[in-house]
Amino acid sequence: MWGLLYLFLTLCQPLCCQATAAPVTPQSCSLDCIQQGSPACEYCRITRSDVRKALGFNSIERFGSCIPWPCFELMGDEDPKICQHYVQAPNDVKVEFLNDSNSQSDTIIVSWKPSYYGIAFLRGFQVSLQALGGTSVACQLFLFHRNLSLPASHAQRVYKSDPFPGLSLGSQYAVTVMALPVPEKWERFYRSEIFSTRSCAEKNGFEQCKNDWYPEHIEVQQEGSAITVTFNLAPPNLGIRSYFSLCYANGRKKYTDIIPDLTTNKTHHSYQLSDLQEGTNYTCEIAANEVDAVRKMFNVHVMHTQKEDPSPRSVTPSLAFILPLSLVAVAVLGGCLAIVIRRRSKLQMKKFDIQPDIINKHEEAGNQEELVSLCKNRLTPPRLLICYSSYDGPAHVKAVMQLGAFIQQHMATQVCLDLWDSLSVAEEGSMAWHCRQIRESDFVLVMCSRGFNQRPKPEDDDGDEDQAYSSDAIIQLIGAEVGRAKARGQDLSKYMAAIFEYSEETDIPTELRLISHYMLTGDLPLLFSHLHGVALHRPGAYLKIDHISEKGFAKVPAGAALQWAIYEAGMALEGKGQHSLEEGD
Image (cartoon, helix red, strand yellow):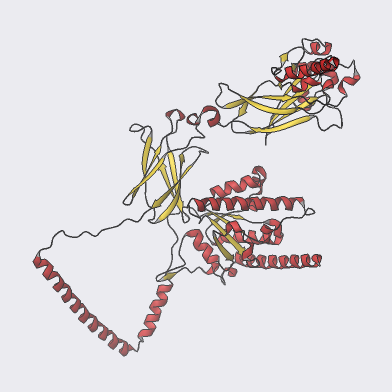
């Protein structure tokens, strides 16, 4: 009985002690010390010069900086079995940030615990760090001396790496901790974790970071037609000397340069917003005039101003009596003069046999064909991003491309389409490219089709599947932006949905039902009106452009190509639907 209790306490004592043991940090020792198995070389860092000495050549030039280092050359080949055992991957890999004096970069230390499985044959660890999307790799190698065999209780010990300095702020990295040795055909020998370095604001404070700073306090006041915006200035140590403001609504933008006078006020500045339409809700942004500056959004509601006609404070009795009599006299004389002129005109018309009805009709026709000019405040054509689903096949994609070409050629609009910028899409990735284009474009047009409501089957092509899921994510992103703008009471005119003639309104996703939607090509004039902010009808005038009308668009080559592409896409989708029905039967 007492023997069993003594054995239990003996086994548990190391575990209890190790739970509170200090982390094991690397020590400097020679490669000879490790190979000879000296107790002084328990957990040693291996330098590049040690590897070069063991191999006889520069391993960086031959193999790169991060490979499983050759075990026999480093540990010695006296015992062939020392490098042939399986060791399980480490556990509890963590990243710890260190406070250093460099405000432009971050420094980390990696910690982990060895696994119970194979711990007796554990010879060391290799830690590698790589920036996501980059090629630079940093590696550290740590070894135990050859005669050391760790007990199972050491699986509760925490081992640490050396610091990894100079990491870019606000970046993502992947850290990998590998247990050594690494036999062939063994996959579970490492553990990886992805982490992000701290942003400049997280490390140094908001007031110390030029790229992260933005105005926090904004106040908008309107007195009459004058709108004044007051905001807090950046701290002097950031060196920001100018700002800008951008307000947009109904497809129009108002850009304002702001250069405050720091001699009068170093903490706040006020500027005027002019040429804004009354009764309109504007979404505005303000930021420092720096590259990639963070923008602060705020709303401006321009209220109607009441204009009172000036009137005299007092009128003498004589003037109040004379004025109505004068008006009556003028009215009588005017009526008489009109009657005389009308009779003369009728006599002349009878003389020349001219019918008044013809003249009236001609004048009415002339009023209807009055020209409607585009907005002169816009210096550049509006920028339109077209999003679509490729799951409906190449014919539908071709129709979208032809639509983009037609809009760019005949509707005074700059079109952005991922198929026209494939190099940037490959470099940035589809989601990143679309996010940037949504942010930079004046309008976003979503071409809805059946593909938005379908998902690819497992046997479908991987490229089509990835594209379909990418399209679904983009639509969800746009839907979230629309919902957020609606909840904040912001302008929704930036986003539009449309379908071709072979699609149905039910193909428009639910999250896009809040925005304007069109049927193309019949609604091309409505789309033109939306893009340029001009009314199709107004008193005495209507918008008439032959090559964007429902019947006239096909007279130009781009319109004829669009019409044919829509016809082919409709036929292809119809054949695809019949094929699906036959497979179902």
